Length: 273
Image (cartoon, rainbow, N blue to C red):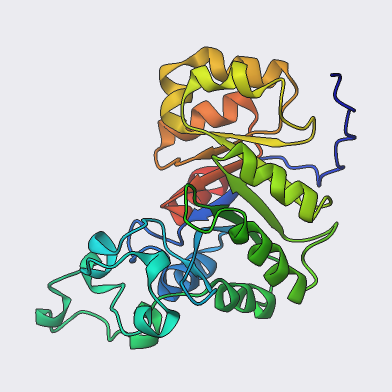
């Protein structure tokens, strides 16, 4: 069956890629904490990237892994825990475990190391003194399936960000997840993430004509043909996770429109310095 072509959205012309803070300024600060995002904003990041998972009591929280072993030293599974339980955990200490013994370490606000809800992150962006965009990734597989996207669109709707002109775009490696977003909020920008170069020929005939494509930098580096095919297809490209000058140059050569980086300040210095 022939797909109905979708008209591509007009986007703000850019002379260089947008710099997106990957889980905040996560090279230096514990990922997905409010501290990491505040640091990224202070450094000048033009957009913030986050992963979202749904808690057992229906809250979207910014956590990458399904379990908490790496970031909170806890064996719990995010989807089986309530927000109140997550709120008791420390999501920051793993990044600098010896800071309590360092007399010169800056004093840390305990609130900045707690689990971060998506609503809190959206409020932070809404209240900031300059425009900031959001790149929100839904994680799959999950026991809640499409409820994740439904809650996400509902939450964006509370801010009036579920329609054209929204500062938010939704990303996923899951084709089903991106299709759900398009049904729930047809005017939102979406990004299909690609972690293997050989997935692109399979995805190309089944994704929307105006979907953004988000390949990993490793695949672009190891499989140069992927970038060439994306450019030839006229795709807008957002690349993760770009942390070095060499990797940034790959993106510049391809004309990508966004680079997602653990080091937003470094990327901005390379681009504008």
